[in-house]
Image (cartoon, rainbow, N blue to C red; front, top):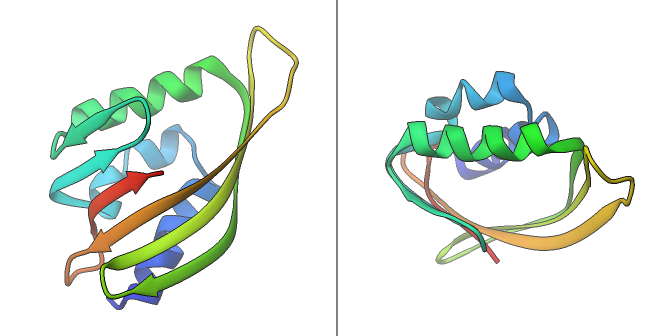
Amino acid sequence: MDVPQALDRFRQFYDEFSPAWIARLEELYAPGFAFRDPFHEVHGDFATLRKYFQRVLDSLAVTRFHVEDVATGSDGSYVRWRWEWTRKDKDDLHLVPGVTHLRFDRAGKITHHHDL
């Protein structure tokens, strides 16, 4: 799988961020993956990543990711996004901008995911 296809799959995962996709993490992430965001760091443990994503979904009434730009350079790909979310116990809409640095293996699976 080439990088543009891998990026499309990553984008689809976050466009459709849901329990159905969480069950399919092995289709997106490579064994031994490294995942890091401002709150968690997970290395190769699909069960832990699945639990983390499920906790996020369980606490939110609304969650939407909007990909705004994608670029690929010599050290991987970069996805600029905006995350809109609302907690179940509050009505305020939160808008969080971010960038994810990604690296893929030859099969197009994510080996490195770092949210900045």
